[in-house]
Amino acid sequence: MHSTKSTKRNGAIVAAILLSAGLVIAGGCSKSASRQSTTQQSEQNVKRYKLVGKIVSMDKEQKTLNIDGQDIPGFMSAMVMPYPVLKADQLDGLEPGDEITADVVVNQSDSSAHLENIVVTKKAGAGKPTSEFHIPKPGDPVPDFVLVDQNNKRIHLDSFRGSVLLVTFIYTRCPFANFCPLVSHDFAEIYARTKKDPALEKGVRLLTVSFDSQRDTPPVLRRYGESFRGVTGDIPFGRWEFATAPAKEMQQIADFFGLSYSDEKGKIVHSMSTTVVAPDGKVYKWYDGSDWQPSELVAAAAQALRTQTPSHASGM
Image (cartoon, rainbow, N blue to C red):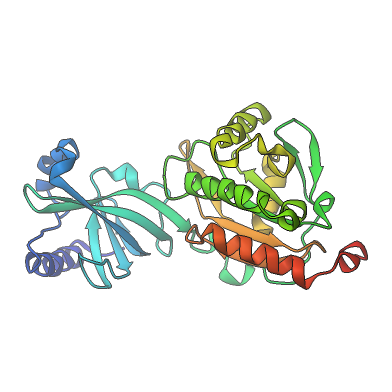
């Protein structure tokens, strides 16, 4: 964590950078309280930029995150700099090394800026040494995990053998549009696209797993799945299932699929993980984050079907 002197120095550097662009990021000082009214400004006076980066350090007292950020088109080049937040509890659950996305909210009335909608896309080793954090690799056999689906029935991952299985993880209460809701909508798009191709309709199945087993009960998952009927064109449960598992088993599942999550005072901080499993039950391709496109997964699924004959799948 930076000292106060270091924080002030960084703040001065940032102010100089942003002044050249006609913008100022509010520092973590007494003035920040008066700037909290920023969130009450009309949206027409606010401009938002998407920040992608890694937390270098944080100062809860100053309500500041020091971020190694990627290039933000139309705003600033890639650099390490401190960003303020409006409330200290927005930093709960965060730690140096976390990879995040956030909105840089610029108030055009007074040229101040702060972060909102901070989402961890990858935890800093998920609390483990990097060497112990499992990243799914092509050819890794997928264990026969047992889950409970939207019909309150037990399902085994081995039951998907012979088909390409697309697996992703969400929780239904996720409030961030670019994460769980986006991935679920993209899975609905994949379902609709594969329905138009007889080979893919027959050979591709989808599985959405909730890591919030306490709240995402089978009835909740069923309603959630049915909410995508407008995209899928029908009730999708024949090829797209929604499931969860008890907390202990879910942690084992998450560990295998390279997913990290933790409940911070009711708010789940989590990464994203999507996997293409080949018909023989082995990892074909793994996607970190939510930046993939439905067309990418459809293409990967089609390729997995082409490169693995039914005889290979049934012989496993």
